[in-house]
Amino acid sequence: MNRRTALQLIAASPLALTPSIAFAAGYPEEAWRKAIVIDGLGGPSDPDSVEGQTRFSARGRVELLRSGTTAFNVTVSDPGNLPDAFEKAVAGIADNDQLIADNAELLVKATRAADIVAAKRDGKVALVFGFQDTSAIGTQLDRITLFKNLGVRIIQLTYNRRNLSGDGALERGNGGISALGRETIAEAIAASTRPMTISHTGCRDLHDNPRNVYDAEMKAAADKGGVVGIYYMPFLVPSGKPTRDDLIRHFEHAVNVCGEDHVSIGTDGGSSALVIDDKARAEQRKFYEQRTAQGIAAPGEGPDVFNYVADYNSPMRFRMLADDLAARGWKAARIEKLLGANLMRLWGESWGG
Image 1 (tube, rainbow, N blue to C red):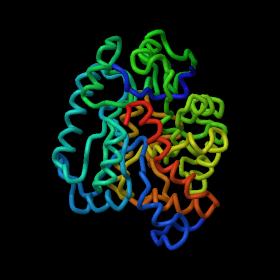
Image 2 (cartoon, helix red, strand yellow):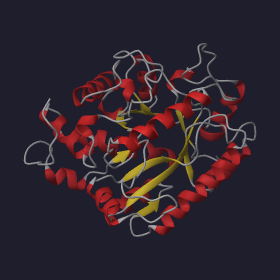
Image 3 (cartoon, rainbow, N blue to C red):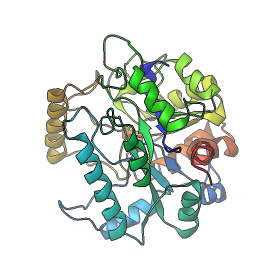
Image 4 (cartoon, rainbow, N blue to C red):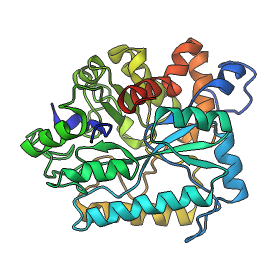
C-alpha cells in the first residue's frame, strides 16, 4: 500500500455557464429532494458565527438546510504531529458533541448508516466524526477502540508529513506504511480486507501535485470496493484557482478510472460561501503562515490562495454541480451515486446498517 494514497481506515471493528440557483433544467428536482448528499470531508459552517458561540445563527441554519447536505465527515482534531495530539482529539470530540447538543434541532451524530438515513428523513444534518491522521493513537492501539466508543468512524493513517504509521504525501521519500501502520490497519479493519476511502483528493494524472493521487492508486482503492472523493481545492490546477470545468474534469476522470460506483465528493471545506474581503485575506495569510511553520503546507498553497472553487462558492454548490453534470449528459442515477449513494454503500458495509 502506497502512502501517497492517504487512504482512510473505517474504524468499524474493535476497533462554462455562470452558476445559477434556478434549477428549471438539469438534475430533476424530485431526484434532488430524495438524494442523500454527503460531503466526505468537510463540515457545516456559519457565516454569522461569533467566537465562542456554539448555536447556529438563523442565517447559518437556513443556509445549511438549503445546501441539501445530509451528512459531513468532520475532522474533530487538528492533524499533524502535535505533542498533545491525544488530548486535543478528546477535546475536539467533546467540542463537536457539544455543538450537536446545542443545535439538536439541526444536527445529529452519526455512528451507523441508519443515522444518516434518519437525518434525511427528519430534515437534519448528520456529522460523522473522523481524524486526518493517527497521531492521537500513536503506538497505543487500544485507543482505536476508545475513539470508536466516542463516535469516531473514520481514521486516516497519515497527513502531509511522516508519522509513526508511515510517510505522508509531502515526504520526498516513499517509505510507505510502517510496521506500526500495518498493525493499526489490522486493529481497525482486519488488515484492510474491507473497503477503504481516499476521502478528498484530485487526479494526479491530470495535475501532478503531491496532494493528488495517481490513477493506479485510485483504481486500487476502487478494486477493493472503496470510494475516491474529489475535493474543491487549489491542488486541482497549476494556477491554484480551479474553475467549475476543472473540477468536473477531475470528477469525470475519476469515474473513467474507477467506475461510477467508486467516486464521491470530499470538498475539504465548509458549507457556506466564502466572502473574500480584507478580513478573509488576513485570515488566509495567517493560516498559510501557520501551516508553513508547522511544515505541513503543500505545493499550491499560498497566502492568497483560497480553498474553494469560485464558480461553486455558494451553499448550493452540490445542487449546482448536479445540474452541471446533468447538462453534460450524466444520468440521474450516476449523479445520485456521486452525491452520496456510493459513500452510503461503503459506510453501511463498514459500520453496519
